[in-house]
Amino acid sequence: MKNLAELTRKDFPIFNYQKEAKDNLIYLDHAATSQKPFEVINALENYYSYNNANVHRGAHQLSAKATEAFEKAREITAKFINASSSKEIIFTRNATEAINLVAHSWGDYQIKEGDEILLSLMEHHSNLVPWQQLAKRKGCVLNHIGITQSGELDMEDLQRKLSSRTKLVSIVHISNTLGCCNSIRQIVEMASKVGALVLIDACQSLAHRKIDIQSLNIDFLAGSSHKLCGPTGIGFLWARQKHLEQMPPFLGGGEMIDEVRLDSSTWADLPHKFEAGTPAIGEAIGMGSALQYLQKIGLENIYSWEKELTEYLFEKLLRINDIRILGPIPDKQLNRGALATFSIKDIHSNDIAELLDSNNICIRSGHHCCQPLHHHYSIKSTARASLSFTSTKNEIDIFVDELFSIITFLKQNS
Image (cartoon, rainbow, N blue to C red; front, side, top):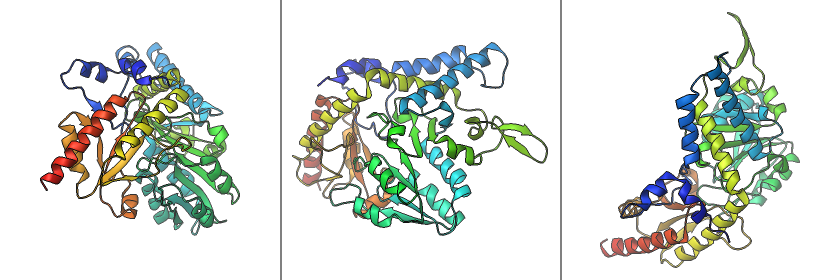
């Protein structure tokens, strides 16, 4: 198996800087946000240093260069997920805004009182709250698919809850807490039989495996740059062009208009109809650079290396007494995300995270924006270690050894 960490860590300033430090930083919080390679930082610096101008609005050379780079980033994004056209890519602030765009624009236009939207217990708050708000506005009903004992989506429950009233299934691709990878093709096949559309929250999958939206046959996809080695403050919505053409604008203002009069306006063509105001130009260019960087490494290579690391992580963690890991245990057949969410009996996850941090090991603690899922498990907080292609087996060894020492220390002093 190709060791991607050996090949790629040199590309990231944070790892190069820490290489000179006495105690190397171990970053195991990639599911929260990814580190940024030199290529992305240089793309941002180059735009702000030499091509800083507004896009689409100026006739001068800087505006032309900025517009070209901005629209190239849109084309790169479309190619990354195999979209039919770059017109189907809407730049947003993040995936949360992308889902809100669908909830407001498509939801307010299409959803009627009594219609149903199907979610799941494992959803991130960004794929729960916008639909709760829509339900209050429109009087629609939210149903939630349960999870199995092993921590996977309950497909039988999905089948039971689908009906002619179901208008949308909005679901995460890879859970940021359980790590399970949902079978999107099967979900789409089931949803299509009742005429329901499908939206995928792909934040935890886009950087870890190849996604082909035409093959998946979905209707909407939300992605976020900062989990893709790109800048914060930029994300995207992909949607079928026929949906985007029917949907009214989400926000009003400059850029998204064709003609404005004092009492009425008409809208610009796609994708600009949904991009009101000055966009995050440098951030979009940086995201485009990040996607090219991931493609250069190869999504298949990333998936294979992270799969090996995840199996190794679980093998180590499962040796610890009193550990409870949420979600399915990986094996050779299981398609699983590169993370482990766990709790230790009688020890708070924040104490674990803080003591690990004192030894330069960064993990996540809390509810991971999945409070309903934690309520389901009758637990308030968990710790989470998440990996990337820059992670190493040595880092996992150090993390698990230190975790074991912390558990021993806290139990002896409780």
